[in-house]
Amino acid sequence: MARYGRFWLSIDVFGVAANTVFVLWCFLDDTFQLVVVFGYIAHLALPAAFIWLPLAIVRRRRISIALGAASLVAFVWLFGNGVIRSDPDPPPAGAAEIVVLTYNLGNGLATPDKLIPMLRSSGADVIGLEEVTPETETALSTGLADLYPYQALYGMGIPGKGLLSRFPILRNELLELNPGRPDLRAIVDFDGMQITIIVAHPPPPGLRRTGIQPREGTAEQVDALIAIIEETKGPLIVLGDFNVTRLHDAYRRLEDADLRDVYRLVGDGLGYTMPTRFASLAESGSPLGDIPLPPVLRIDYVWISRDWYPVDAWIAEKAGSDHRPVGARLAIQHELGTPEIVA
Image (cartoon, rainbow, N blue to C red; front, side, top):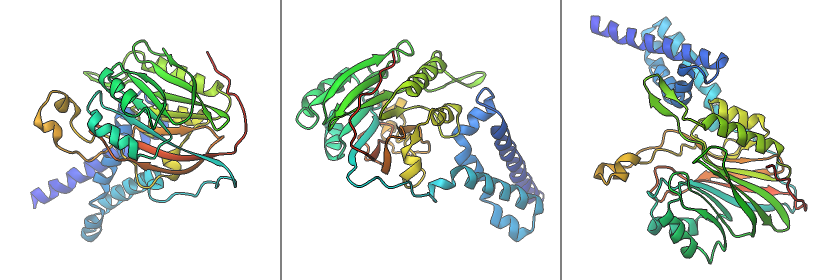
């Protein structure tokens, strides 16, 4: 009986902790460590607090019922859109459609023998790539030249970026918003419309004695990227691995910059993209790195300006990376225009 009492005490203590951090998240920002951690684990912690709710009801444990119900409400409020979505406005008749894909290649984990067939079968018109190695750059430039004749590839390992396109890339440049972590910006001629595409990859946070902390230069990179987004005129697509979830400040700032998360609007399910394997073990050659993992984080995104109509979004097939690709079908009214380029 004492053991049974300790069990419910543990459940109640965890429920108090989960609900308390949720309340803190509602009022505080990412400068507070608990809020940062909650952003990465809320989708796991809250269900762990309310999974016992049916048993608590049967046992008539009022405190446990209240805590579990509060956690359930918080979860539905935060993640309910992954199950129930509102239909966005349909594109106008005759709107031009484009399929885009973003994929973090895992610094070589997505090997060319798997990557090239996957990209060929993806149906994407434009593909943004992160963590492109020199070897991958060489393989893609030759192995996909027939399908994607327009390429901007920078094989630099983890900072490497790439853009593959069926449509002409009029110009491209690396944006040194964070020394050693350049983002890629390109202007693509999409059937007469000039659209801006940015491939971005801010660094992941680091685990230190003081907790989960942003790496040097990350804040400045995000600030500069958002400034460019806000000042860019015309159709804009931002692809990339942002290393944050929907519950973090950087995500909210991208929304405040008038971007829209396509998967959140028209995707099915929660859309987790990583991890699919133990990346560090795979890079070291350990057989444990081949063990498949169920993704539990959504940190890879397709963002669009309000010029676009989101039609569909999905998690695409993987090709060996520790991430899953994100695909999206977009539509736009066929109007000519030239985007303004911000220095």
